[in-house]
Length: 384
Image (cartoon, rainbow, N blue to C red):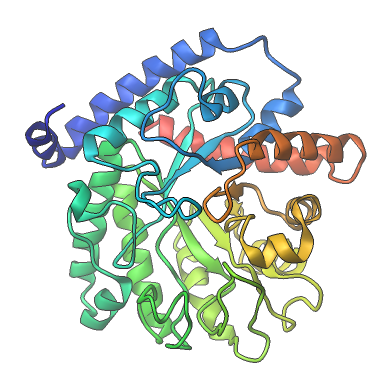
């Protein structure tokens, strides 16, 4: 598809998305027919709980990610524009036409349709950049400063149209962290929070999620139960917010959940002794099962932040972190493969979880519960 043609279909997103969904449905049928004999259902369920990052602007039958998809080791992928380990901008995104083709290639290999995720917050966290031919984006901080819900809706709709046209069905956005510490190196300083006022964060976050839903794009609000007060970067090490976190940081999440618009909640790799004296949020039963599910009443999908970030990787190791996260209540484990690159991470994680279940370290019921939540979410995509 030529660039001019793609710009035209972006102006008619419903027609483009409908056409793309027909292609994806056909590809799903082909992928199912070509898949290996059905493995144990436990293997299928575990695979749906894993999302990975990979390298490649295009993929071939021999590509590791395609093998993982066909073997049903993963249920989703996450796309990046920049490859951090290689320090080069040639990861998965080069142009609208290329991204669209890549996603078709991925979905065609999938016996069960994939979650295709991206961090398209706008502003500094912006994978679909203008230099690649995508519309200009703005930061959450700018939208919160303007404080016009019409403006927020407009930019969120623009993002959703673009994602839907490409075939990206899940956005790890908006950020619902309250900007209680403007010097926070990964929230405040990067203009990722709408405001220091939790009400403004809640209003603009909810408007963003609703706009995504208009175009069939799922949302993961983040980073529960609040990363805005941190002084450390959890990408580089454990962030302790015990002395800085405030209960008001939960309010935006509570608002979106109570509105019935919350698809996914992404956990924060932050330690908060006020909520759990032992584990950071991603690994905490108190935070996920206790606070998020029981107190706030959220029964949707809980997704981890990247399990390869130093806050988790250095302190716990892969096996312990995966076991703790699953038992805490995480449904979808993300291995972004972009702080370190481990080409066999899907196979390793899958085998590891299977062994945990067989050894009784993680119950089958726990796997079943997460699988059912994810299948319920995916059924919404197929019905769009």
